[in-house]
Length: 141
Image: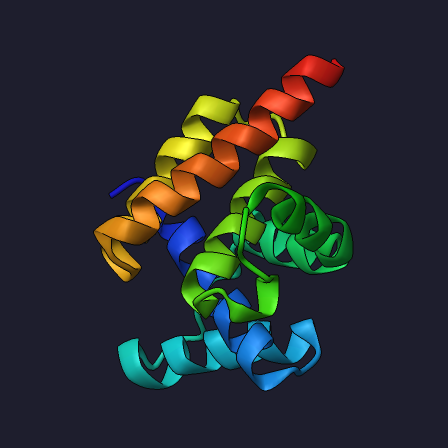
């Protein structure tokens, strides 16, 4: 597994915790690293700048991102979406709009996250929303 794919998986885990616990993002990041330290190794884990940029950026832009999700997720209120799907969308939209990663790569990675952590119905939902967000951005540019 590529290190960026692993970083995205870890970012999703942190975002899920942040979303569920309604705690400051730095606490969610620290808790994640704390679990690595206690479970995987006696050595302090190395920080992952890509992971932390994804998480902090997603949280910082969450209001803007949630508005985009809401406008493209027909018949779904954001608070009623499964938390995993909601955070996959948040993460992917942040990466698509605020990093240099090509949209096709971001969408593919988001679909892999949905396959791994959600279900096939969610894969189609995530794909539809991300495709709509991408088309809107491409039309505006």
